[in-house]
Amino acid sequence: MSLSASDMQRLVSLLGTEQDTSQLRHTLQQKQQQGNNLAKETDKLMKAFTALPIGPDQRQRKLQKDRLLNDFSAALNSFQRTQRHAAEREREVVARVRASSRVSSGGQPEDSFGNAPQNYSQVQAQAEAFNEEDLRLIQERESAIRQLESDITDINDIFKDLGMMVHEQGDMIDSIEANVETADNCVQNASQQLTQAASYQQSYRKKICILLIVGAVGIVVIGLIIWGAVKQ
Figure (cartoon, rainbow, N blue to C red):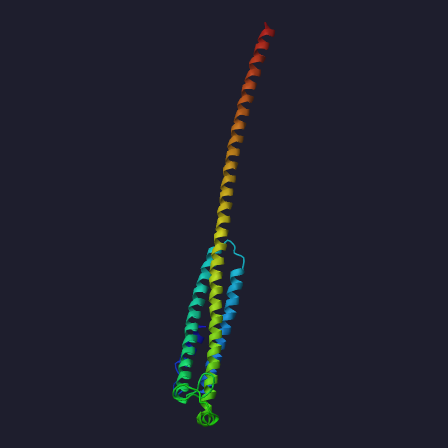
């Protein structure tokens, strides 16, 4: 897209000069349409990339997406500036041709005071004086201007899409980070509970061992007492 903008800028700089030919304007229009179509296709790809599920590497994915968005936005800005410059140069040429041939915006002749002639003979006389090539040129330029304005609007819509993608991606990252943080907290709580349970179990086992030892000692003592009594 940056290459398209560079090529367009070179052609736009020739508008209104001696090198301004039908072939040059045709080539410029082709470059303009190619750039506009490329912008739309790139916009679709960016939307598809943004819609991909984000996994554990969401930080890396976000960095990649931010870099792509920045590069795309910079290319769009350059392309749209060239579009606006082209429309401006076309308007300048139309104004210059109209001034030289005294053709109004509606294609009707005007006198030196800007008033339309009143009688048919005046209309006919002035109409014969007009250069048909100028009329054709004005129509061609105005058509190009309308197309440029429409394409500039398309680029504005793409800028809006980029803004939405940045906003949605930010919300998604925040949500994922919140979920990861919650999961970490749950894991930490579970680990603490397991540690406490293990501690309780170890303490319980110690108590059982002590009771068994005390019981065994008691049995031995009682056995010795009984044995001594029987022996006597």
